[in-house]
Length: 91
Length: 197
Image (tube, rainbow over all chains, first blue to last red; front, side):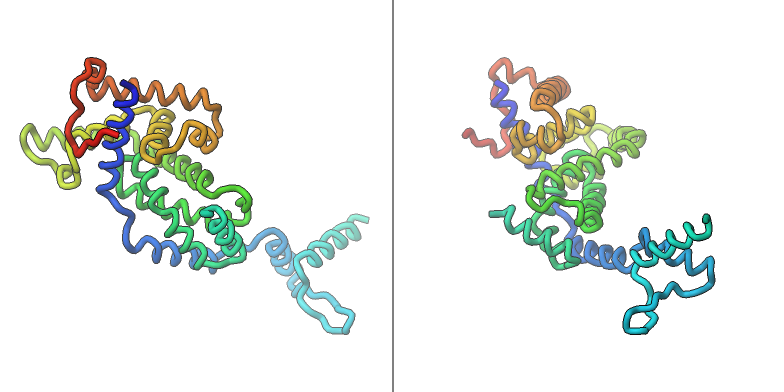
């Protein structure tokens, strides 16, 4: 009897669900939303630290490269500079 | 074979491809929508949850283990988001339905009639919507998605015994609320294009 009930329930639930479909424009809306999310991705981790660092000391976080050019730091380099500075200040 | 395609698309998605997201959506949207619909009983909620699930896929793509099949992850996120929706809407869902039926009165058509395929199917869906959430999810995954008990257990990260138990109690509750005692007496099943296997 459980088998018959299973069959009955299965058919009923599927018949009911078959009456509905996802929206036709769902794909387009999803991709628009995903694109918006990508454009407004929040600054993360070291990027935020670099920004705060520059904000506090009112200067761009740059580093002198072997070729003699000053360029904006990578995130890891910014973090290293920050830690080194903190250590220097503490000592 | 399907998993290989999914794996490839996830890798592309992890590399930032929105085309891959669109293709994954095309491949799995019916399953996600159907599951959300079965659990919430609400087509609009199912539409919203469908979007949310795939936006999460996009957002957390880098955390997805490519070697593992994608469907269990999709099922899990769908049920979790559906749980949040059900919790948030529980206070209002049934009273509104009851009100609609009261306003419609006996013999009159209600707004829900427009989308009813049959009285039996609608009663079954309503009965499922009245199940406790834990039983409802198992019932929907098992009946609507043709998943085995083992597959349901893996998706929900539960022991198979627990899934079996929830399905058993869910069935009992459905039997009672649908007054399916006639099954025990061997009566004929309702006719709705029913074909015996």
